[in-house]
Image 1 (tube, rainbow, N blue to C red):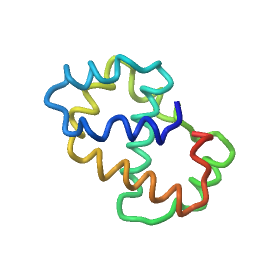
Image 2 (spheres, helix red, strand yellow):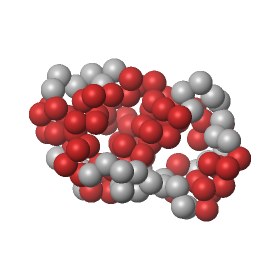
Image 3 (tube, rainbow, N blue to C red):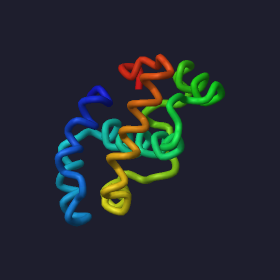
Image 4 (cartoon, rainbow, N blue to C red):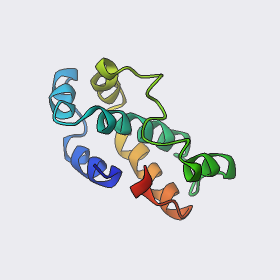
Length: 112
């Protein structure tokens, strides 16, 4: 699923009431979509105070090396709901930064 659709789906549920409610939400997505929630939130967190992606990270994005699976080795599938719950109300800011910075950098998010 396109990352924009995933972010659009998660927004109304933020903040999650519990780890269980976050788990219930992500259970309807396949593994690649679940890790995309995490990869995009961490990228957004890194750019929370910026308007564009720096040249080094943009090269990784453009080359496809940095993608929705970027955090796959760092966050196991059974930890995704916990991470979403822990980040909770901060998720909006992280996802907003992800969208803002990728847009302003000219990155085609359909590749993410």
